Image (cartoon, rainbow, N blue to C red):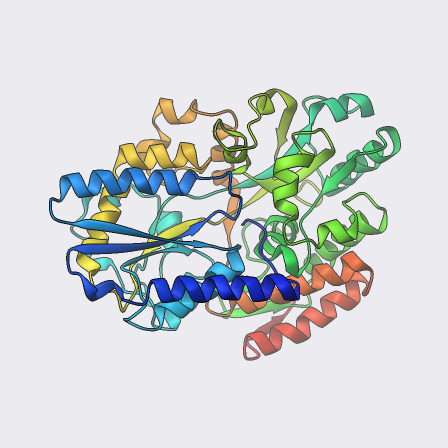
Length: 458
C-alpha cells in the first residue's frame, strides 16, 4: 500500500478542513436524484498524477452514452490513504452523505462490513457473466466473514526489490542480482554504503507515518518469509486467533533495526516523513540516489508520459528482484498482495445504477486499460492471458509472475488495529527507542488489546 500518515498538527487541521468541505459538498446524499450515480474515489495527493481521474472521466462518458438520461457525478477525495479511510467512513454512516459507489481498500473492507457500511453484491454478481473471469484469490479479498462478497476488485499488486543498475555497477554488484536470503540483501546494502557514498543503500518503509506501507511493504514482506510459506505467521486460521510471541516477528523487527542502526537506510527523519514515498518515486530513484527499494508493482505509473515525473528510461536504469525468504527456504521468494475494490454502500440511494457503472468499468477492455494505466496486476483471467497486457509495460510480467508466491493480509475486522501496532513496533526499532525483542513484547501487549485477547502464543 502507498504510505499513509500520522500527521503533524497543522496538516491535520488543514486536512480535516478539506474533509469537512468535501463532506458538505456531498451532503445532498446519493439518493437525491434517481438518475445520477455518485462515485467517490481516492484522488492522488500528487497534483501531477491523474491516472484515476482520467480513467473515471472516460468511463463516465461511456456510461452516459450507453445509458441515455443517466448521469455520473464523480466525487474525488484528495487525501493520503489514512485520511481517505476516515473520510469515507464518515460519509458511509448516513444516507445523506453516502455515495452510490466507493473505492475500498481490501485491508479495510471487513472492518466496514462489520460496521454495516457496505451492501452484499451476490445477487448482482450471480447475474453478471464477467464475474467468472475474476481469480479466486481476488474474490476472496472482497469477501466478508459471512461468505458474502462486498466488492469487485479492480486489480491487485505485488511487491519486490527495485535496484539501481548504475549504483550496483559502481559497487561491483551483479547486474542480474537475485538475492537468496535476507543476509544477501543486507550484504548488498553494506557494499553500496562502503563503495558508493552519497546514496541511500536501502529503503524500507517504516513507522506510523508510513501507515500500511510500513506494515505490508516492509514488515509483512519480511514476516511472511520467515516460515514455510504455507502457514500464516500473523493469524492462525485453525484457532481464529492472532499470533503473538513468534521468533519470526522478532527476526523481522531485527532486520528493520539493523537497516537503521547500521545507517543502511534513509535518515530517520526522512523515513518518518509521511510523504517519503512520493520522494522515493519522484526523486531518489529517478535521480540515482537510492540503491535498493523494497516497494510495489505500481511504481511505473509515476513515470509514465504526462505523470509530471516522466522517466522513460526507468526500465533500463532499474533492475527487479524477488524478495527472498529469510534463509532461502522454500518457496525461496515472497510477495504480499492487496488491492482495491469497488463497493456499494449499504445506504446508497441508487445501488442498481452503481452496479451498472461497475459493469461498464470492468469490461475486459476497460479493465485492461486500467491495469496498464495504473501499473496494476490483472485479476481477470482473460486479461492476464492477453499477450498485449503482458507486453504493455516493462515489469508487468515480473510482478504478475509473483502472484504464484504471494500472500494476502488477514484482513479481518481487527486488522487495522493490528497494523497500527505493527507500525508502532517498526517505528520503535527505527528510532532506537526499543530493541527488537522489547518492541515485539510491546506489540504482543497491544495485540491482546486490539483483538479482545484473541491471541495464540507461538
